[in-house]
Image (cartoon, rainbow over all chains, first blue to last red; front, side):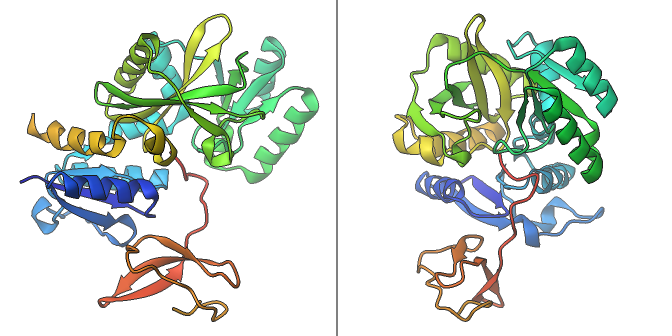
Length: 284
Length: 54
């Protein structure tokens, strides 16, 4: 019998659903708190009981990816892998990979100082959207519509001076309906998709956008498969916008995808698909 | 259980698991359910970090 571990730092509805499904499928299932787990350079796989495969589900990106690195050091299979987590956790890396693999994505401009970012803005023109390269739930995602906003925002970045504040990620503002799309892909299967409707600029469910079930079309399926392949595959949340000229464009790929709302309305059992994928991935 | 901050009464559901968050109805503080030496205790929940999310 396969044993599966779910690594968490805060138990959300998603982690409880995963645990329940894994148990119902008959797998020996353990939830492991990343915050109280220790590793060292001489740790061995036999020192732990992570089972055959781990689902890494930390809400903190840095905690999760470093925990994943430790698990891979011990040769313990993790979903998603360190490489995938790294590719998805950093928006700049995601954009580069999407573009490299010919996945339609909004045009995005990178610069490494405030002055160079201003030059980008002068050259391209307003509006552009600035996003932190690491972060979620729409935090610090700001539409830059004029020079005053840019000056204020860049000044704040100079004061806070976090390491990621020196990376300026500016994205075209896609002309789209007041919604975007989120699809969940598990391996090669798109298991569910939803529109996220919002009257505001941001469409994050965490910020109050309304979810609405979306039919998985061939276009959505093909795009999700391409985007997943571009970042390395696994269990992912693919965010898309409906550009009025180009059709669907992928703007984000999420590594530790949240699915609480979608699971209530989806026709497929999302956590079950995730558990089965994890177990099958180590059987191959 | 009693709130470590205000001594209010926090209801910890019987089916709650370690790592879940409960809130104090009196002062609103959030606590994480943890286990120490086999017994349940409440520790201050982490606040939302810059790297939190999907």
